Each structure stands twice: as structure tokens, then as C-alpha cells.
Image 1 (tube, rainbow, N blue to C red):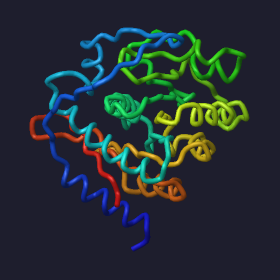
Image 2 (image 1 turned 90 degrees about the vertical axis):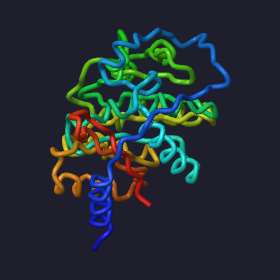
Image 3 (image 1 turned 120 degrees about the vertical axis):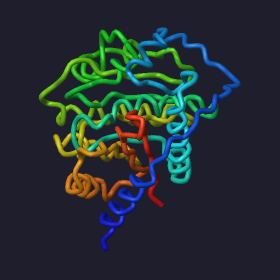
Length: 269
């Protein structure tokens, strides 16, 4: 059995072992005031409607993202890394939803700040999940001479900043691999030592964007849609990521006995 087959076998075991986990409330001990970054207040009901459940009270599913947070932090800290890519085999798996919920869970850890970069230039969704009115985004930054601080948004959660997307581009792979994007990533990764950066990237099998962007991140999280992504799609995705540290796999849209959806994160050894 080769390495990717072992990964797939482990994923299949994770699917069969997926469980619901009960919620616990975090207790942040310090706060940050945003002076240069635009800060907005998010609507809790809108967040719940869009399944952004981390940080909301009385939601049993939220705790699974805290477990995922622990697994991701362990992987990043072991390698002394601060950049994590989140992608999926195909569109519709829920990678942006996982990105947003994981980002909030990470921001609840008082030891670091979190920056979410919506790097899916074909179909940016991060801002939508927060209910943000995005006037300028990453695409505008790459095409025009816009100061970064005019684009960054604090979506109402402490220690969390979003670099949103806005619009779409048919030249996304060229923009993501451009010198300006590489310079931006270098600046973001080096400016704050305690910052974790999450890159929400396009699906692996839909375009070559993520493959071209690989030099910019140290580890990746693969979001797989239960019942839709085939074993062949998962194998092909793992093959693309074989030279990248795999922080884990999130099995999304798992149907429980009650008909609700559950998230089943699994970290490979």
C-alpha cells in the first residue's frame, strides 16, 4: 500500500468513526482595539443562518471546530509554520465555511491573531459568510495600487482580520502566482510573529491556482464532501498535495441520524 492509499484508508476510517461533540464555551482573557483596520459588527442570526456557528452559544456542532483547531495548531507549531491552505477536490464541498469557522476558533486562542485571505479569485465567499459589504478586495489589490489597510476588515471577532475577495477573474492563476502576490504573502507572514494565516483557495481539481500557489504555504487542510467526492477525486487531490504537509482532512456534510449535518475532522498521523 503506497502513501496516498494509506491516507485514503485513514480517511475512510475517519468517515466511519465520525461523531458529534458537545459544545464548550471559550473564555478569552484579553482584547484588541482596531484603529487602522475597518471593524464591523456581524449579525449573530445571519451567522447562524449561514452556518457560521463557532463563537455562537448553544450550538453543539461548534465544538468540532475547536477540536480541529487543536489538531491544526499542533501541526503548525510542530513545524514552526504560520500559513495554512484550505482547499477541496471540487466546488461545493464547503471549504469556505470550514475556513470561516476554523478562523474564529483559532482567534479564540489568546496566544495568536488570525488573518483569513480569500484567495479564491474565481469564486470568493468568505465575506458572504460574515455578511460583509466588500467594496475592495484582494483582486482589486492585485490589479491596482490600493493600500492594504483599506481592504482589511475585522468582522466583529477579536483577534480576527479578513482580507476579503471581491469579484472574479478568469486570470486567477496568473494573479495568484504574480510577484505582487508573492510579495504580499511574504509581508503578511513576516509582519506579526504570532499571526496565523488561513488561505481559502480554489478547488484542486477545478483549476491549477492552488498548485501554483503552493510555495506560499507550509501545510494544507483538505475539505471532502461526504457522499459526493469520489475515492478517485480524493486520490488525485492527495497526489497534488503529496509534497505538502497535510494538516488533516475535514469530512463535511455528514448526515447524522437526525438528518442534520456534522463535521468530522481527522488529522493524519
